[in-house]
Image 1 (cartoon, rainbow, N blue to C red):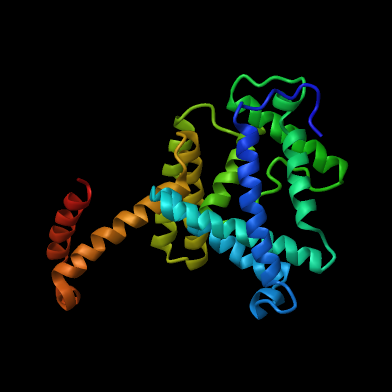
Image 2: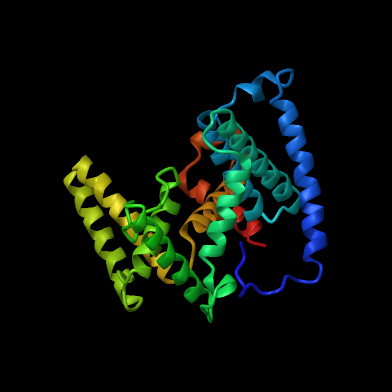
Length: 277
């Protein structure tokens, strides 16, 4: 499968491949046993469709663990992801749709095709050029299959809205639809903020939702421009808010409902100082 241009693997790669194959084989043996006629009723009745939500959920849990920097939790959650992917592939075989081997072979072949700077005779001086190769080849593949080959196609609708917005904006940017400097996204955020305030003043519920969406998208564009991932930024902000709220909650208890705004803000400030150390 690899071309004659394929570089040599690291010296210890073969031993690591053998180690990984042994571990994956053990996992496959467990999963095939679970789906055997006398295996687990729950595992046996799963289909590709029924497992889709679990694949998504485990991916989010893995992202949370990785984002929190918890290596043990990340290892466990990535294991759950791997298990669900393999289980879904096995379900595909039961449905005569595809096999686990076809899933693995398909992605391996795709990786080789889309990395001509590693497995072919093209070059990539940096990650941007490598990504450009990937997107160009992907677009060519979609065109040959008569699929939607828009520059922004291929972004899953099931992604969280913030992450989906980022991926769409990034793809549009790589196609040339982008601001030339930071003044552009800054101005757009200010413009959308003004339009949202106007909609609120007019008490136009439909327009408020529309303008709020436009403002959020403008913030995503701004984040993309300054190389800040808005999905991770928002997750971090939610975690900080949650930590600080819990401190306020523990400090005031049931009295929080009757506390004045001044009291709440004073305790919030203390909580912020505690969690910022």
